[in-house]
Image 1 (spheres, rainbow, N blue to C red):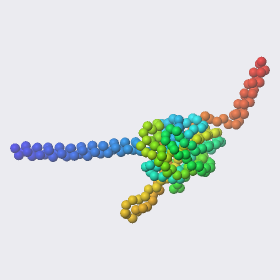
Image 2: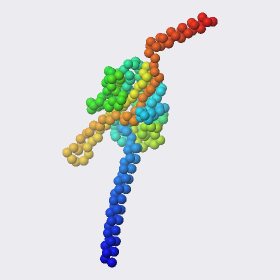
Image 3: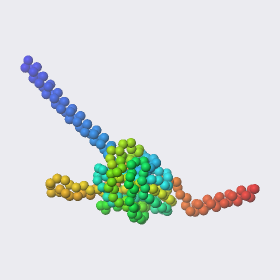
Image 4: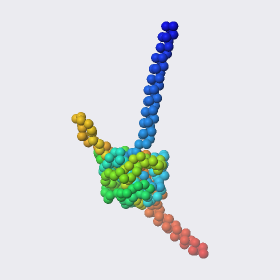
Length: 262
């Protein structure tokens, strides 16, 4: 009888340990799942989107074939606070010659009651240059910047408003908008270039709370639109002037040959 009681107590204790470990395991699984879900729905500080573009999964980029389009730079102000000194770069092939113009506008796809302020044009870089972020570090080249590439740059100012709904602008146009922030929309016109790649970068600040020795300290966070949330214009090849001259000569010759036959 004593042996039976000891055995039952042993089994009961063992079952409690198993249940406790199972509970810990399930709790860990639940936390991991929640972490995955929360990261899946995370909204970046900065995003770039082109209206009507197609998302290319291979390069994780919004791609348009048009030479004029509406481009957004969206800031997650509602979650991160003001995003300051935001800049937009447009990378192009150094050997090509063309122009890119940006005109502030508003979008009609979402609530966007405020037009962007005036742009600051920072010029066209030399060949092989890389955009510089606010802390002096270089923007990661991510297969775009380097020899053979130059870039235009504009200063967009500070994103401080929360008057537009924001979702995760990657893969597809979002159907839910859990955050609020500022959307700067621009009418973009491209001439002469076969490929234009856009990046956005800026910074936001946080203040250390509490009563410790670092309370009140301000930390600067330098951010850029993730490389899964950027955009480019991939345009038909532009014939060189000599090619256009030969083509024109050929057309003239073809017309003369047709007249002779008549």
